[in-house]
Image 1 (cartoon, one colour):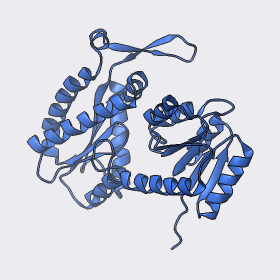
Image 2 (cartoon, rainbow, N blue to C red; image 1 turned 180 degrees about the horizontal axis):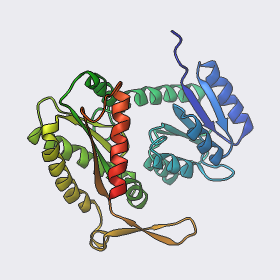
Image 3 (cartoon, one colour; image 1 turned 120 degrees about the vertical axis):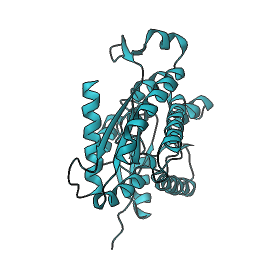
Length: 300
């Protein structure tokens, strides 16, 4: 069986550098796509998600920081490893890139052999992190889907998705470091509730940016849901500064330079049980849970 090539997106407006990187990494066995503009890179990522991005910071339209910021706001692209390859050498520039979640920051001129090794290591870490969330330490989406597969042949199960609504706005206002603190707290609270009130066979996973999955039995759903909602609503409010918590919203800049008001984070839970429909695959269960969650959020 032929293995699928890992795909690298190179975002570089200098044609000579772009061509050199493209030729080199294709020679190393990777599939390589290129973009000279930040908005073109975002469009390519929406069409086909790359396994890794190597990008400059100075680009003709939006800079590399903004490209990364927009990638991190989308569930589809938020986990793509990004390596900055740039002439910007200041400590503040490096810190700004790493704060956005870049896995590496390399300055020009660079050693091609070193870049190859850093790319290889980043791809290996990303492969591991797809199994375990690097933020919460909980099983990731791939493991969740594997745990859902055997449920199609069983009864007396329930799948609950717990989502933190408003996480993207929180990250925009306070940064991804603060957002990671929220996610770790959420994962710990859900795990503690399951340990306290669930069964020995219950499973908790972190399947997306702000999405957690719990597999349990129908008899435990209401108790678990009540405890999770109560404790999460109490806990996540304390991640806001007092002034924002007291007024009940945060202020964010909009595209025109004005301000918009955004609600504080809240908890939404969708539940699917074995008797709701005949399921043929674990993926069908997963998609049905997502539909249930959207229905709950629409009502709220």
